[in-house]
Length: 280
Image (cartoon, rainbow, N blue to C red):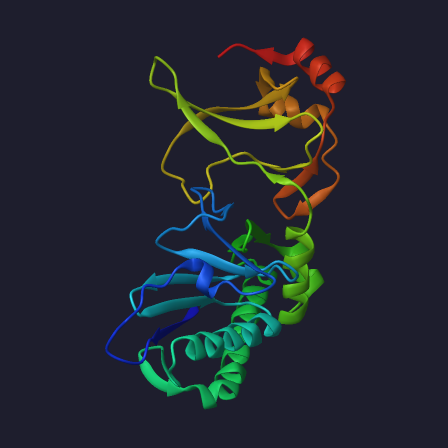
């Protein structure tokens, strides 16, 4: 569920817009990689813009000559909705127009307060639906895309936020403000054409790992085994089976319903490899 906005420059002669022209103070941007993790300062077909001091879900920005397309996903926080429309107004000023297109309807910047209230209601309804589905077991934990990385929403998160979108925004900011690497699996093929997946953990780097390894948003590939590779002294030193990894490290510091936080030093990594190292 989302809302789309198109803002066209007024006048006959359209100027070419650059991302730097529309990223204002306390904002940043980037594109999503294949695991929906932000690659900072990159521009793509759909660039994500967000606030550095209040990291929520962000919103998509697409630049065309004389026009900017925006899309904001729901549910999100009331504060992010208000910021989104303040951003719309600022872009309208930049493009010398008082009219923009919202959901394929031309509207005035004078009516943004009405759209803020409308989108706040839509966002709350979306969160309420997620809450009901999770509490009644009609839905497994779901992923909501944050500005920096995905966040899993399950019973744990619903117990924290309920149906309060402001609490949802606070949760998104708190989790994405953690200085941690969001680990993603890389898939490789053996000579017998079987597939295996590898997660990488670097010494003394706080990382976000899944309780259960798998391919994010892709259930079609059959992965035979999952491994964790250790990097220390700036080199890849070896790997161990994911199940051996899980059985021998502390996984009690949770990040969200499906992920935990972990950091290992070189000594522990060497000890684990001495016992469980596998050849690929």
